[in-house]
Image (cartoon, rainbow, N blue to C red; front, side, top):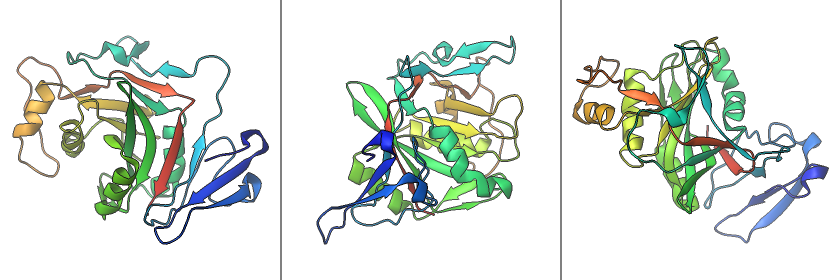
Amino acid sequence: MINNKNSGTVSIYTVDSKTSSSSLEFRCPTIEKACKCQHITVHTVTLSSPSTIISCVEKVPQGETSSNITVADSEHGHPKSYDESTTSTVLRDVHIPTRLMEDFLELSKDNTDKDLETCGILGASLEEGVFYVTTLIIPKQESTSSSCQAINEEEVFAIQNEQSLFPVGWIHTHPSQTCFLSSVDVHTQYSYQVMVPEAFAIVMAPTDTSRSYGIFRLSDPGGMSVLKECQETGFHPHKDLADGSTIYEDCSSVYKNSNLRFEIFDLR
């Protein structure tokens, strides 16, 4: 955790199953590829048992500490709240750290420059009926310009179990494509949403000048029913819904929260 936030002192706690916990203190200006003052950027985490953790508390700006995420309405050219989602199911609110997407892009930059996708898993705690995303896990992975496959997933499961996290979603880049969910992406999203109805997918599309990111979920019951029945793999078309609605839609009830502690595990 970060102590003495205003002075830039960071405490990194490492716990090993064979030894007692210990604390190492560093000054932010002297840490290379570890963190930046006021927010976290982690480039390398060595997985131990329990896992090594680096965390931070984001600096709270003046005024509100959370805000509803909006997305440009392509038909009318004005912001549309995700609360206007067509999903009829009542979903619990989800709060994500304000800098989550920006920090993920920083960690993805090397791959993005090579036109390779990067993916990460989002873990959340559940408190009083609200999900708080507190953990970003970037697994070992195999990537192309249009796909990303996590490997050694047991490392991800170990962290989720240690931290008692709900798998509320995932995040990945489209380094040279527009912001959308592909036919492969919607199958990945189904695997999350069938476990946690509030689960969502964040797509970061840094080269899309019309929409640099999107937060999506499968429509329910429409999209969920289509994906449940679909047995195909790879890139393939999905049948249209009878009522004319789409398989996926802008996510509802997602908020940016500038007062969230979050941890980043980069296992690559």
